[in-house]
Length: 471
Image 1 (cartoon, rainbow, N blue to C red):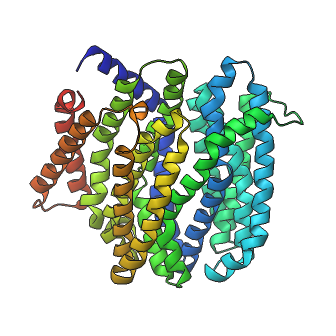
Image 2 (cartoon, helix red, strand yellow):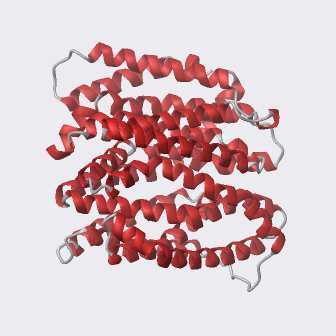
């Protein structure tokens, strides 16, 4: 490993470790809260909660995700020009317009949602109201990333989780259904937004004007992201809505629970993009060469996370039996497909940074659209034949194709990754994990002990050969 590569890995790990405590908190929340919900709520209420969360996600995807991403993308550019107030004012008024569109969508699609997905009007309204605190929090979190205030970010997540759990357990005594979760989320997120605003001492004062040139630049960059992220949301969630529309509430709950457990490590996966994106954009704006840096990020991503994803692939049955009720036994069969899908989805996001740097997000949009259409046919055919297992297979195939198509798409000016180095790291780490699993397969011991031994052996071998794997 040469000196430049070693420095890259040191910088990447420094950025990642600053946000790692917050990721651990999010993972613990998923591991604890989802099984608790599965035990407390009946399958119908669990399915309603999972569908409500995805409705919230699609509303944020279509309105505020792209707005906050634009803040992150253009902050350095307008900071260099001394025009941050103008940027923030423009983004503020775009956000106001976006939220007005959400209420319009509520009135237009209310009957469809209530009739097809077993959601009552109170639950739908609570989901709509959640958009306000969630969008504010997204914006504030981008500012924290830009300012590199990782401690405040971590503390805000800790306070939110403790407050949310306490509120849910209290409200559930009065309202024993999925609505209790949404009310608790509304209150807790509003409280955290207020806490971050006070801590940041954010002195921005919105102007009653919208800068046309900045608005056009933001929209040119971000509007394709709406369609792109909607397609990604569709790929990740179509199966749940198919089952819910067919009143197969247990299958909705199984697929949703399997996804949330298999991707409980997603916060670890996303920390690479979360911590690295501002650094990459800054290097790009300063006209620095960073192909090696970019490649090293993806190599390190594979080196760290293939072992973690392997746990959910090789030991899905043990995990399911350990933490879920017996009626969720089918989770074990689809968890490997969904764990691999989550890993590939975040890998794709890293690879697709190339489109964001050159403001060519329309390329990503076109690919996402084509694969979303394919996902529909895959889910329709495979769910009909294999039920929940078919849903897992369809999602895995779609995510694999998304990665492969994006790897092979792009002109030379989008080539920021050495795919030969990436492939070498991927293959070696995978083979080490598969070999470790086969070596331990016949050992008869408690599942927790077996998983712990697997992680230990896998980690030691990878660490011992890290220079060869990451070079």
